[in-house]
Length: 180
Image 1 (tube, rainbow, N blue to C red):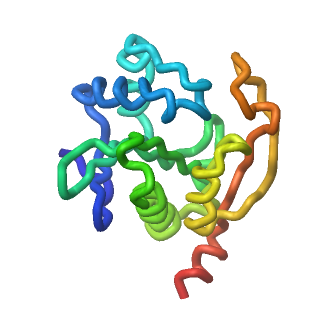
Image 2 (cartoon, rainbow, N blue to C red):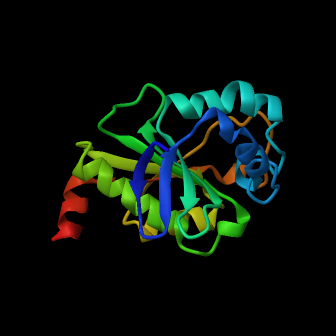
């Protein structure tokens, strides 16, 4: 197992070809997909042919509960498309059974520390829909601060998309000040 990072309760490991069914299950839950596709599942073919190969190639990590070995979801820490490698984007998607346990905060904090402490990041940012209060709360708990609201074109309208997206950020100096 190619372990990238370990926290008190999670192992973050690289994805493998064997993880397709885990992603199909995750992306089939309407509540998990509410702020991503309006609750529509990601087709299995798309996961197998596009999503999983992209996860394997880039900075996506399967989150595994250390005590049970259960798949909790995934995290990513990677530059945005055409973005600066010194400014990685933080992201996460967890199974509903893993909600409310602090895993999103725990995994995000570990990745933020890795970004600044080992990878030389200047800035870490995360984005979500304005109406996704749960995800925004995780960002705030991790020390990220509101940076901006922006609007993007969605292929299909999702409830709340008219309020736009928000971006939160943490700068290296802020992270260092919080460590002292």
